[in-house]
Image (cartoon, rainbow, N blue to C red; front, side, top):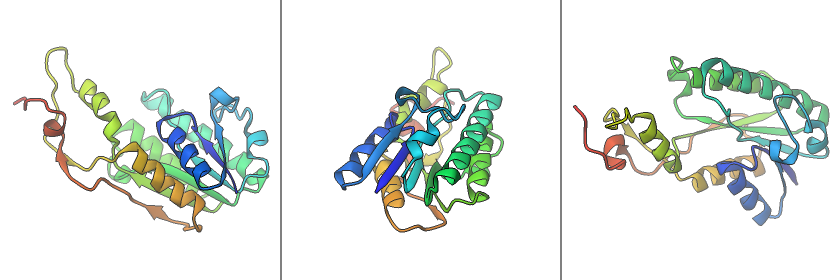
Length: 202
């Protein structure tokens, strides 16, 4: 089965490509590196030809509110347009656990918009909601660094390894159509500041 992975050169996408090929699927990576640009539509018609499934694990290069909204809305509309024309039978999107409860964030508002577009399209879909990746913990620490100290709330969260996220997305894409949602999460809860090994800042 031909499965096209949008964002196939990224952290999750590259792992997903490997896993799908190991299971005998024709997994095709689609990203600007391979001449596919979902923002402009460039290369989408060609890469989606004869594909049964498309998996979107792409992410915005900018998290600025307007830029991230433009990325997810424009790229998703293009993917749905070209996917419908190509006769795609299943679209799988990767999103974040709790997106609907975090609308004060511009990034999560953009993910909500993306999910709505997918849900309201004519293409059968599945959406995987994953928790934060272990691999992004350094970025979390950098975000809370004020030049002298790392300031983070002592909140509980359940991070996942990127490899496990790729497995969950792959199972959804290669498996039976679910027309719904999946919520994989880490097996253990951590307090963010403890997991990062930083002293608590009061």
